[in-house]
Length: 294
Image 1 (cartoon, rainbow, N blue to C red):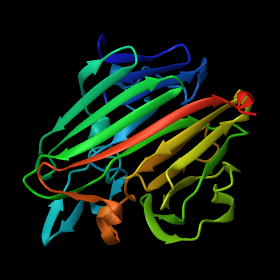
Image 2 (spheres, one colour):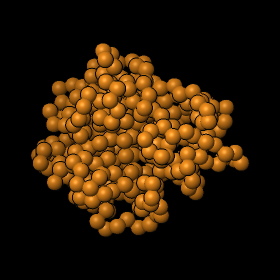
Image 3 (cartoon, one colour):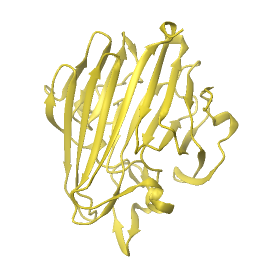
Protein backbone atom coordinates (compact mmCIF):
# COMPACT_ATOMS: atom_id res chain seq x y z
CA UNK A 1 0.00 0.00 0.00
CA UNK A 2 3.03 2.27 0.39
CA UNK A 3 3.09 4.81 -2.42
CA UNK A 4 -0.53 4.14 -3.32
CA UNK A 5 -1.90 6.84 -0.99
CA UNK A 6 -0.75 10.43 -1.53
CA UNK A 7 -1.08 13.19 1.05
CA UNK A 8 -1.56 16.80 -0.01
CA UNK A 9 -2.23 19.81 2.13
CA UNK A 10 -1.28 22.70 4.34
CA UNK A 11 -2.28 23.89 7.80
CA UNK A 12 -5.90 24.45 6.67
CA UNK A 13 -6.76 21.98 3.90
CA UNK A 14 -5.85 18.30 3.88
CA UNK A 15 -6.48 15.93 0.96
CA UNK A 16 -5.73 12.21 0.67
CA UNK A 17 -5.51 10.69 -2.83
CA UNK A 18 -5.31 7.13 -4.06
CA UNK A 19 -3.78 6.02 -7.32
CA UNK A 20 -6.46 3.30 -7.43
CA UNK A 21 -9.35 4.87 -9.29
CA UNK A 22 -7.42 8.16 -9.45
CA UNK A 23 -9.66 8.96 -6.50
CA UNK A 24 -9.88 11.17 -3.44
CA UNK A 25 -10.00 9.11 -0.24
CA UNK A 26 -10.63 11.95 2.21
CA UNK A 27 -10.58 15.72 2.58
CA UNK A 28 -10.92 18.08 5.53
CA UNK A 29 -10.78 21.80 6.23
CA UNK A 30 -9.57 22.87 9.66
CA UNK A 31 -10.29 19.33 10.77
CA UNK A 32 -13.88 19.30 9.43
CA UNK A 33 -14.61 16.72 6.68
CA UNK A 34 -15.64 18.26 3.37
CA UNK A 35 -16.47 14.87 1.86
CA UNK A 36 -18.49 11.99 3.25
CA UNK A 37 -16.21 10.07 5.63
CA UNK A 38 -14.96 6.91 3.92
CA UNK A 39 -16.34 3.72 5.42
CA UNK A 40 -13.35 1.46 4.76
CA UNK A 41 -9.78 1.79 3.60
CA UNK A 42 -10.93 2.62 0.08
CA UNK A 43 -9.53 1.64 -3.28
CA UNK A 44 -5.96 1.86 -2.01
CA UNK A 45 -6.66 -1.47 -0.33
CA UNK A 46 -8.57 -2.74 -3.40
CA UNK A 47 -11.94 -2.37 -1.64
CA UNK A 48 -14.02 -0.63 -4.24
CA UNK A 49 -16.75 1.78 -3.26
CA UNK A 50 -15.26 3.64 -0.31
CA UNK A 51 -13.60 6.52 -2.12
CA UNK A 52 -15.13 9.96 -1.58
CA UNK A 53 -14.63 11.22 -5.14
CA UNK A 54 -13.60 9.66 -8.42
CA UNK A 55 -13.12 10.84 -12.02
CA UNK A 56 -15.50 10.06 -14.86
CA UNK A 57 -13.53 9.26 -18.03
CA UNK A 58 -13.85 8.82 -21.03
CA UNK A 59 -17.45 9.74 -20.17
CA UNK A 60 -19.76 9.54 -17.19
CA UNK A 61 -22.89 7.80 -16.03
CA UNK A 62 -24.65 5.03 -17.98
CA UNK A 63 -24.58 3.95 -21.63
CA UNK A 64 -27.95 2.47 -22.54
CA UNK A 65 -27.68 -0.91 -24.23
CA UNK A 66 -23.88 -0.73 -23.95
CA UNK A 67 -23.80 0.39 -27.58
CA UNK A 68 -24.18 3.45 -29.79
CA UNK A 69 -24.10 4.43 -33.45
CA UNK A 70 -21.80 7.10 -34.90
CA UNK A 71 -21.28 8.00 -38.55
CA UNK A 72 -22.92 4.79 -39.69
CA UNK A 73 -20.80 2.58 -37.45
CA UNK A 74 -22.19 0.50 -34.58
CA UNK A 75 -20.00 0.57 -31.47
CA UNK A 76 -20.28 -1.85 -28.56
CA UNK A 77 -18.79 -1.52 -25.08
CA UNK A 78 -18.77 -4.37 -22.56
CA UNK A 79 -20.36 -3.76 -19.16
CA UNK A 80 -17.74 -2.94 -16.56
CA UNK A 81 -19.42 -3.16 -13.15
CA UNK A 82 -22.43 -4.68 -11.40
CA UNK A 83 -24.84 -2.42 -13.28
CA UNK A 84 -26.40 -3.80 -16.50
CA UNK A 85 -25.14 -0.67 -18.26
CA UNK A 86 -21.54 0.32 -18.86
CA UNK A 87 -21.07 2.75 -15.97
CA UNK A 88 -18.91 5.84 -15.29
CA UNK A 89 -16.09 4.98 -17.70
CA UNK A 90 -12.91 3.09 -16.90
CA UNK A 91 -10.76 5.40 -14.79
CA UNK A 92 -12.61 4.82 -11.52
CA UNK A 93 -11.86 1.09 -11.72
CA UNK A 94 -8.20 1.29 -12.75
CA UNK A 95 -4.81 1.96 -11.23
CA UNK A 96 -3.33 5.32 -12.19
CA UNK A 97 0.38 6.07 -12.42
CA UNK A 98 1.90 8.71 -10.17
CA UNK A 99 3.68 11.17 -12.48
CA UNK A 100 4.65 13.60 -9.72
CA UNK A 101 3.89 14.30 -6.06
CA UNK A 102 4.83 17.06 -3.63
CA UNK A 103 3.39 18.38 -0.36
CA UNK A 104 0.76 20.42 -2.19
CA UNK A 105 0.37 18.87 -5.66
CA UNK A 106 0.14 15.60 -7.52
CA UNK A 107 -0.23 14.41 -11.10
CA UNK A 108 -1.83 11.07 -11.93
CA UNK A 109 -2.06 9.45 -15.36
CA UNK A 110 -4.11 6.59 -16.73
CA UNK A 111 -3.50 5.05 -20.17
CA UNK A 112 -6.32 2.92 -21.54
CA UNK A 113 -5.83 0.72 -24.58
CA UNK A 114 -8.73 -0.45 -26.72
CA UNK A 115 -10.20 -3.70 -25.38
CA UNK A 116 -12.57 -5.57 -27.70
CA UNK A 117 -15.37 -4.92 -28.43
CA UNK A 118 -14.70 -1.27 -27.49
CA UNK A 119 -12.60 0.99 -29.71
CA UNK A 120 -11.95 3.49 -26.90
CA UNK A 121 -8.23 4.10 -26.41
CA UNK A 122 -7.19 7.22 -24.53
CA UNK A 123 -4.89 8.88 -22.03
CA UNK A 124 -6.32 10.61 -18.96
CA UNK A 125 -4.37 12.98 -16.71
CA UNK A 126 -5.35 14.58 -13.40
CA UNK A 127 -3.52 17.45 -11.71
CA UNK A 128 -4.38 18.15 -8.07
CA UNK A 129 -3.15 21.26 -6.29
CA UNK A 130 -3.79 22.65 -2.81
CA UNK A 131 -3.25 26.42 -2.55
CA UNK A 132 -4.33 28.24 0.62
CA UNK A 133 -7.97 27.17 1.14
CA UNK A 134 -8.54 25.83 -2.38
CA UNK A 135 -8.30 22.43 -4.07
CA UNK A 136 -7.89 22.67 -7.85
CA UNK A 137 -8.38 19.64 -10.10
CA UNK A 138 -7.59 19.58 -13.80
CA UNK A 139 -8.81 16.49 -15.66
CA UNK A 140 -8.07 15.85 -19.32
CA UNK A 141 -8.68 13.05 -21.80
CA UNK A 142 -6.85 12.54 -25.10
CA UNK A 143 -8.15 10.24 -27.83
CA UNK A 144 -5.57 7.59 -28.80
CA UNK A 145 -7.98 5.57 -30.93
CA UNK A 146 -7.63 5.61 -34.70
CA UNK A 147 -11.31 6.60 -34.81
CA UNK A 148 -13.02 9.85 -33.87
CA UNK A 149 -15.06 9.08 -30.75
CA UNK A 150 -17.42 10.96 -28.40
CA UNK A 151 -15.76 11.70 -25.07
CA UNK A 152 -16.47 13.67 -21.94
CA UNK A 153 -15.29 13.97 -18.35
CA UNK A 154 -16.77 14.57 -14.94
CA UNK A 155 -16.31 14.16 -11.20
CA UNK A 156 -18.32 12.04 -8.79
CA UNK A 157 -17.84 13.38 -5.24
CA UNK A 158 -19.78 12.21 -2.18
CA UNK A 159 -20.70 14.94 0.29
CA UNK A 160 -22.23 14.72 3.79
CA UNK A 161 -25.98 15.28 3.94
CA UNK A 162 -27.06 16.65 7.30
CA UNK A 163 -30.46 17.90 8.40
CA UNK A 164 -29.42 21.46 7.60
CA UNK A 165 -27.54 20.91 4.35
CA UNK A 166 -28.36 23.52 1.70
CA UNK A 167 -27.39 23.60 -1.96
CA UNK A 168 -27.22 26.60 -4.27
CA UNK A 169 -26.81 25.87 -7.99
CA UNK A 170 -28.39 27.45 -11.07
CA UNK A 171 -29.40 25.43 -14.12
CA UNK A 172 -31.99 25.79 -16.88
CA UNK A 173 -33.53 22.34 -17.31
CA UNK A 174 -34.20 19.18 -15.34
CA UNK A 175 -34.25 15.58 -16.57
CA UNK A 176 -36.63 13.05 -15.07
CA UNK A 177 -35.47 9.49 -14.48
CA UNK A 178 -36.80 6.32 -16.12
CA UNK A 179 -36.20 2.61 -15.65
CA UNK A 180 -32.58 1.57 -15.47
CA UNK A 181 -31.59 4.88 -13.82
CA UNK A 182 -31.48 6.50 -17.24
CA UNK A 183 -32.56 10.05 -18.13
CA UNK A 184 -36.12 10.29 -19.44
CA UNK A 185 -37.44 13.72 -20.46
CA UNK A 186 -36.17 17.29 -20.05
CA UNK A 187 -38.40 19.99 -18.67
CA UNK A 188 -38.77 22.79 -16.13
CA UNK A 189 -37.07 22.29 -12.78
CA UNK A 190 -39.60 21.28 -10.07
CA UNK A 191 -39.92 23.96 -7.42
CA UNK A 192 -38.73 21.75 -4.55
CA UNK A 193 -35.71 20.68 -6.63
CA UNK A 194 -34.76 24.17 -7.85
CA UNK A 195 -31.61 25.28 -6.04
CA UNK A 196 -31.02 28.60 -7.81
CA UNK A 197 -31.70 30.61 -4.64
CA UNK A 198 -30.53 27.95 -2.22
CA UNK A 199 -32.69 25.13 -0.90
CA UNK A 200 -32.40 22.28 1.61
CA UNK A 201 -31.85 18.88 0.07
CA UNK A 202 -35.13 16.93 0.22
CA UNK A 203 -35.11 13.53 1.87
CA UNK A 204 -36.22 11.59 -1.18
CA UNK A 205 -34.61 9.54 -3.92
CA UNK A 206 -32.82 11.80 -6.40
CA UNK A 207 -30.91 10.72 -9.49
CA UNK A 208 -31.42 13.54 -11.96
CA UNK A 209 -29.46 15.53 -14.48
CA UNK A 210 -29.53 19.33 -14.53
CA UNK A 211 -28.80 20.92 -17.90
CA UNK A 212 -27.09 24.25 -18.74
CA UNK A 213 -25.52 24.78 -15.33
CA UNK A 214 -23.69 28.08 -14.86
CA UNK A 215 -20.68 26.32 -13.34
CA UNK A 216 -21.08 27.60 -9.78
CA UNK A 217 -22.46 25.93 -6.66
CA UNK A 218 -22.36 26.36 -2.89
CA UNK A 219 -22.98 23.66 -0.29
CA UNK A 220 -23.67 24.75 3.28
CA UNK A 221 -23.51 22.65 6.45
CA UNK A 222 -24.63 25.04 9.21
CA UNK A 223 -24.21 22.34 11.87
CA UNK A 224 -20.48 22.39 11.14
CA UNK A 225 -20.16 26.13 10.42
CA UNK A 226 -18.89 25.10 6.99
CA UNK A 227 -19.64 25.88 3.36
CA UNK A 228 -18.00 24.73 0.15
CA UNK A 229 -17.81 26.78 -3.03
CA UNK A 230 -17.60 24.80 -6.27
CA UNK A 231 -16.52 26.45 -9.50
CA UNK A 232 -16.26 24.61 -12.80
CA UNK A 233 -15.12 26.24 -16.01
CA UNK A 234 -16.16 25.29 -19.49
CA UNK A 235 -16.64 22.63 -20.75
CA UNK A 236 -18.64 21.73 -17.60
CA UNK A 237 -22.27 22.58 -18.45
CA UNK A 238 -24.30 20.03 -16.51
CA UNK A 239 -24.45 18.26 -13.19
CA UNK A 240 -26.02 15.14 -11.73
CA UNK A 241 -27.65 15.21 -8.31
CA UNK A 242 -27.85 11.83 -6.62
CA UNK A 243 -28.91 10.69 -3.15
CA UNK A 244 -30.76 7.62 -1.92
CA UNK A 245 -33.79 8.26 0.25
CA UNK A 246 -32.82 9.27 3.80
CA UNK A 247 -29.12 8.72 3.04
CA UNK A 248 -26.42 10.55 4.99
CA UNK A 249 -24.71 11.61 1.76
CA UNK A 250 -25.43 13.13 -1.62
CA UNK A 251 -23.47 13.43 -4.86
CA UNK A 252 -23.15 16.67 -6.80
CA UNK A 253 -21.44 15.58 -10.03
CA UNK A 254 -20.11 18.20 -12.47
CA UNK A 255 -20.15 16.80 -16.01
CA UNK A 256 -19.28 18.07 -19.47
CA UNK A 257 -22.24 16.16 -20.93
CA UNK A 258 -25.59 14.65 -20.06
CA UNK A 259 -25.89 11.01 -18.95
CA UNK A 260 -26.51 8.57 -21.81
CA UNK A 261 -25.40 11.34 -24.14
CA UNK A 262 -24.56 8.86 -26.91
CA UNK A 263 -28.32 8.46 -27.42
CA UNK A 264 -29.37 12.11 -27.08
CA UNK A 265 -29.52 14.93 -29.66
CA UNK A 266 -26.11 16.55 -30.19
CA UNK A 267 -24.67 13.64 -28.18
CA UNK A 268 -25.82 15.33 -25.01
CA UNK A 269 -22.78 17.59 -25.05
CA UNK A 270 -20.16 14.88 -25.59
CA UNK A 271 -17.18 16.11 -27.62
CA UNK A 272 -16.14 14.30 -30.79
CA UNK A 273 -12.38 13.95 -30.43
CA UNK A 274 -10.21 13.00 -33.38
CA UNK A 275 -7.06 10.98 -32.82
CA UNK A 276 -4.68 13.09 -30.70
CA UNK A 277 -7.29 15.66 -29.70
CA UNK A 278 -7.86 16.45 -26.02
CA UNK A 279 -10.67 17.68 -23.80
CA UNK A 280 -9.45 19.63 -20.75
CA UNK A 281 -11.53 20.59 -17.71
CA UNK A 282 -10.88 22.52 -14.49
CA UNK A 283 -12.69 22.33 -11.15
CA UNK A 284 -12.03 24.14 -7.86
CA UNK A 285 -13.35 23.39 -4.38
CA UNK A 286 -12.99 26.17 -1.81
CA UNK A 287 -14.21 25.61 1.78
CA UNK A 288 -14.93 28.43 4.24
CA UNK A 289 -16.21 28.78 7.77
CA UNK A 290 -19.66 30.37 7.58
CA UNK A 291 -19.03 32.45 10.68
CA UNK A 292 -16.02 34.10 9.06
CA UNK A 293 -18.01 35.15 5.98
CA UNK A 294 -20.55 37.29 7.84
